Image (cartoon, rainbow over all chains, first blue to last red; front, side):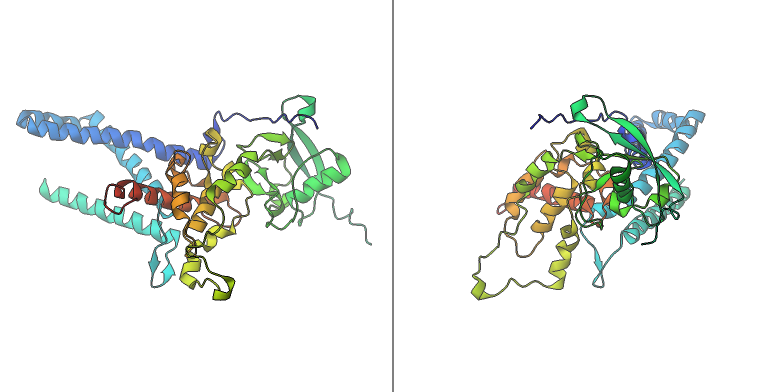
Length: 131
Length: 252
């Protein structure tokens, strides 16, 4: 018997070879903007503790062109982040039974997205009333 | 017997990734233009090539009806069973056919699945009864609800499509992988089984569920509609809970 000479193919660029993997990488990449937005909110809280002038400086940055662009980009990225994670959510949960029947993946994803939309609108309305 | 060559007027170009280890060359695509009919599978296309064009073409197959799990390969870049995929959907081609991703190529479309075979017994893929019974004491009864908990995971045919769909396995093959985790889960949630603690050691380990990053493509490509991503991620929850509860009295 001859010796086996198997061939191992390289993995370089694996995520560019399939649209499914590109969507996956986009989902993972949204974490960077989520992190940056978290820093922005942290900056706001720290400014609040540092007095009125500091807090007004933070508010002014939010209203600056760069601040507005960043917030619009964040909004789009958060929407994709939310949607993509609710798509994978049914795969991360034990089976959910409603009235003895197993809830479909589409129903779980749909419920998640619906709750996210309702909560976001509620927060938007509440913020409008407070300001 | 009527001659069916007149019906086979349409042709499809199939580009097969060939690898001949004895020739020492890198794998390369070889093009075959073959006649096809609407009812021909990709596997039948390969069989035509082997019978009529080049007898050296090597591939695995057996049942031709999506139950033996032998003919998994990359078909136009997607892991599929060759017997379960029609040529007509890719006509006139060229249709690229390659061995399953993430496994070493043995020859042509045949991959070396040693890694999978060696991992298989480590998941204890059998029932170790919770309470041993003699046959005279009767069978182990199960309710339909208890059956439903594991049934879909028992449909796995070990075709390895989910491994070819898993980039984490491709990047580091120490990962137990989607298929075997689904099978491990199948036994863990079986009401008759008592070997869960043993299997959970493997689930908790670095090679276990924590190598998964929830890509989820394994479940998309499964020809038997098993949901390996669900098995893996349910066990992440189980693994995390047991990590925290080990600090509590009675926890493990």
